[in-house]
Amino acid sequence: MIGTREVDALVVGAGQAGLSTSYHLRRLGVRHLVLDGNDGPGGAWRHRWPSLRLGKVHGIHDLPGLALGHADDDRPASEVVADYFATYERRFDLPVLRPVRVRAVREGEGGRLLVRTDHGDWAARALVNATGTWDRPFWPRYPGQDTFTGRQLHTADYLGPEEFAGRHVVVVGGGASAVQQLAEISEVTSTTWVTRRPPVWHERFDQEAGRAAVALVDQRVRAGLPPASVVSVTGLGLTPQVLAARERGVLTRLPVFDRITPEGVAWDDGRFVRAEVILWATGFRAAIDHLAPLHLRGPGGGIVMDGTRVVADARLHLVGYGPSASTIGATRAGREAARAIAALLRDESGIRTPA
Image 1 (cartoon, rainbow, N blue to C red):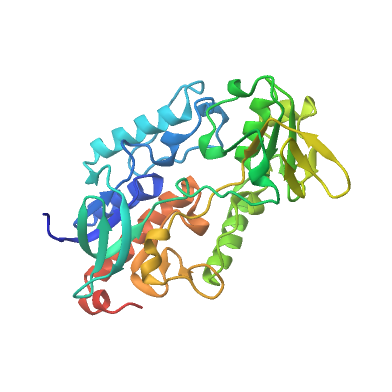
Image 2: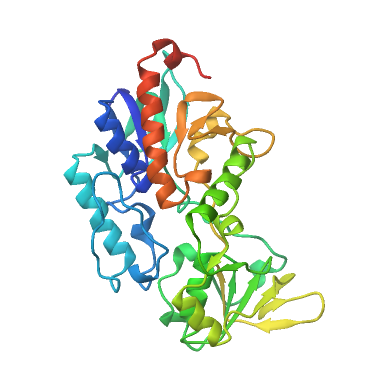
């Protein structure tokens, strides 16, 4: 049986945020490992639906030290990013172990964090959590949901529009994935779009708007509130695909229904839409359940953050969480977390005493 292995720092997750962190930790000379639960490179991108072509995504920010370069816009984004991340890991000889799934992180001995995985335990002086959200899809609950005789699926299970041909699909959700999938599905069958709030569209999202969005999310996590959804602070982009869908009348939305029946969805005012499929494009939540033994959540339901650092414990950093959830934010957050950890490891008193 393998005993507990010691390491200075662990990075959990090998997506954009995790690879950026590992790159900077290596440059700073910090002995570390990256534990990734996936079977191969690509992070959450490797799970994106095949019909999501590179040309349809909002943009993939370059990882530090190696640009993505020219890529075919007609290739599935999942393939392009998986290849890019694989090249990146090899180029910089990043210490990624996979597949290794972290089960729990708890207080260990000698000021270390004990990280339990399906491949044994590690004791780390610092930990960067970069697990993103893909492993925790959010399914809302509505009266009658279990009585629906059609098919229900989440964005995480979506493979493409072809399987829905000839069946009426209700798409639930107001985010970018909802709009992208609605646009695709509407080309092969009839659809109904429902959202909790009317969508807010923007024609261009410049740097000033980006900074304002990041500031709003940062304000929430500093106050210990759960991070807001991306679309709630950025709005929805009017891409060529979205504009084409609007021209076809696809983007006429209804307020979310009040209940689900065996044959469809219904509102208290008497409206009813028959459906064979309900697609829950309702987003994801931060995949941080493995941190629960550390009791980091505050009264507001979130984790109080200062940049990437968990205020309650200076050994812990969350990258790809809150304001660093975008690809550009995750890249910058990786650098910030690596620098803070390198400084922490130089200060033995700081290592042993949570902030």
